[in-house]
Amino acid sequence: MRRHLAELAEQPQSYDPPKRLRRGVRVDTQDQHGWTIHAIAPTDIEPQGTVVYLHGGGWIDEAAQQHWWLVQQIAAEAGTTVLMPVYPLVHTGGAAEFVVPIVAELSANTEGPLVLMGDSAGGTIALSTSLLLKERGRPADLTLLISPALDMRMENPEIDEVQPRDPWLVKKGQLMLTEMWIGEHGDDPILNPFLGDVRGVGRLVIFSGTRDLLNPDTRLFVARSSEAGAEVEYHEQPGHIHVYPLLPTPEGKRARRAIVDAVRETVTTL
Image 1: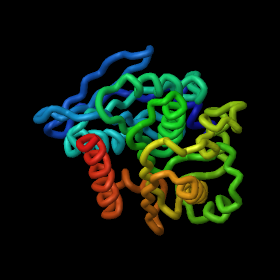
Image 2 (image 1 turned 90 degrees about the vertical axis):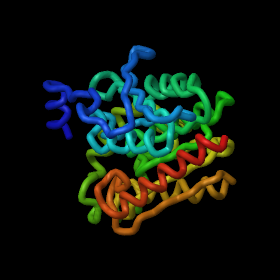
Image 3 (image 1 turned 60 degrees about the horizontal axis):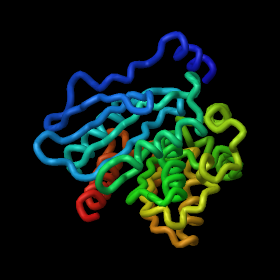
Image 4 (image 1 turned 90 degrees about the horizontal axis):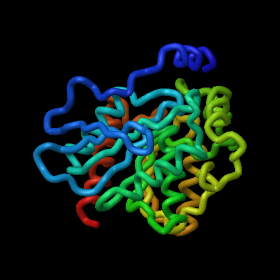
């Protein structure tokens, strides 16, 4: 992880849109709050509502090709505008206490039904933003999380049981990144969203695979949220790894279809 951070410092990744886009979508790039914001929208219909998508990558990587595939699919098939902020990463000064309030302001200024969405580290930002918007009296209509990192402390003993089965994530490296992201705010119920009160936060849709280091905390969060009376729809895929809905597998394809359906239902019926 330290080697990767050193490489990123020497050669930052591009955050430009792909040169070839899916047919039927366009990407407009704008600046807001000092950030670059990519707006992905369908070209053949008038979009309804807004999805604010926070990409994953451990708070150190820019959006990957799989993120771009997904946001284009959502825009085209759900008939909505997807905003994908290029938020500052931890090795460039980005941290939860600075990033989450700006995402909340960006989200609060959107038109129509609002969907907050993110995968992995982006799922952390999406849920933190959702909790902050609820606190401010403007909850999102849907918060959709893909393999989210929920508890920055990673104290769940079941994480160590899953570790040998997870071919991707390593707890020690994850803790290094979460500490960089949250700093001294590990007990903050918004910035460490596992501790947040989800009552009144709006509908939650969550995806997780059982070979994911983050799955034990996700299970706990879903159980606690359901007990608190939140509207939670949970998709758990046995034997699958981190961010499986972004992967080119039959299970990933079904998950993407469920994601598009959930977004379309939200932006067209509210």
